[in-house]
Length: 66
Image (cartoon, rainbow, N blue to C red):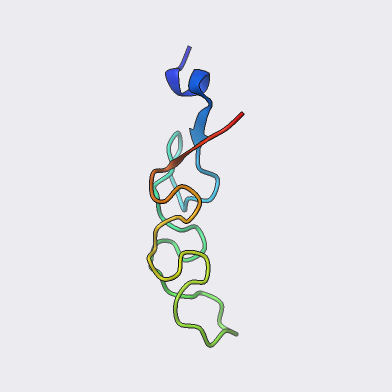
């Protein structure tokens, strides 16, 4: 059995890409850090605060699950 499965570690659902492991990039801005919402005056992505790193997994690409 897969070690990641037995430990409850799974792919981060909020990463921009990746299959078994997320790529660690913010899904909302595709890792650019730029706000993609055209109707907003805020220049930085509100989800990652402009870092481009996934806020859910902090760039690890995985999260602990049940």
